[in-house]
Amino acid sequence: MSYDFKREYKDLYQPKTTPSIIDVPKMNFIAIEGEGDPNTSEAYVVAVETLYGLSYSIKMSNKEVLEYIVPPLEGLWSAGDDFRGGGATITDKSMFIWTMLIRQPEFVTNEVFENAREKLTKRKPHLDTSIAKLITFTEGLCVQALHHGSYDDEPVTIISLETFAIDNGYAIDINAKRLHHEIYLSDPRKVVPEKLKTILRHPIREL
Image (cartoon, rainbow, N blue to C red):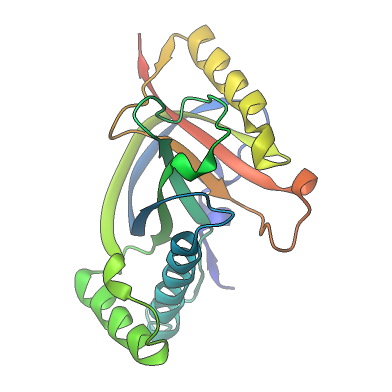
């Protein structure tokens, strides 16, 4: 049976719709930064294609190390100077600033990553793989919940996250380094908006 991060780390990838507190450990990711409306931005499309291309290149080239299922797409989001992902309604999605991520197994070193970059460049020369980087990210203490439905309806779940955090002695700790975080368990190309499943996660600190 292939190693499945969602199965092995249920606390990270299988939260309930009711909020909970979690201490997120250090993990490896391939990351690509960009900005613009994800519904219309060509940069966003290219970023996602590049992330999956690199992730599958690593997976297919290292089957003897670990047979695994590529983890879901994730995103860190903010927008403009006055919005840092705290749940405000954004009507102009062209203001979004994002970092898209896919988690990588622990065996993925810089050497493994560079080999994957080289192979993907040969297979898909139209992709500029230099936009991707391998990072280590420790998110730390957070509040999270599973959101059912359209991305546009997320503010309702975000309010429940923030209320739960405050009621349990925490403050939301979104800043330039700790951002609104989404993990996409559904493919919006294949699932209607009302059935989408997305993990919403906000960093917190003790009061």
